Amino acid sequence: MSPTRNRRLPALLLLAALVLLAAGCQGRRFDRELTVHSELLATMAADAAASLEQRVGMPEILGLRYPLARARGLAARGTERYPGRPSLAAFEALVADYALLVEHLERTRALAGSGDAVDRQSIDEARRLARQVAEGRGDLLVLLGGEGR
Image (cartoon, rainbow, N blue to C red):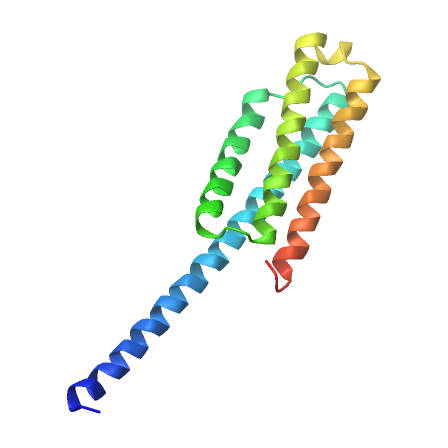
C-alpha cells in the first residue's frame, strides 16, 4: 500500500462512520416524530369523540384538520426517506383512521347543526373511529419498540 493511501484510510473510515451515525440519528428522530404525532392524533380523536358523546358541543374541525395535515406531511417525508418501514405503514394507517374520524365529524356537524341534535349512531361511530386511532397508536408504538421499525 502506498503511503498516501495509508494516510487516507483513517479519514475515509471516519467519514464512513460519521455518515452511518448521521443516518442512525435521522432514523431515531423520525421515530420520535412518529411517536409524538401518533400520541397527538390519538388524544385529539379521543377528546373529539368524548365531547360529541357528552354533548358539550361539536368538535372544532379546523383544530382537528391541522394535525391531520402535519401528520400527512410527516408520512410523505417518511415515504421518501424510509420506504417499506413497517412503522411507517402503521403510521399511515393511523393517519387514515384519524382522517375518517374527521370526515365523520364534519358530516355529523353538517347534519346535526349542534351537539344536542347528534344521534346515538353518529356518537357510536365517532367512538369506534377514535378507538381505532388509539389501537393504531398502540400498534405503532409496539413496532417502534421492536427491531423491525
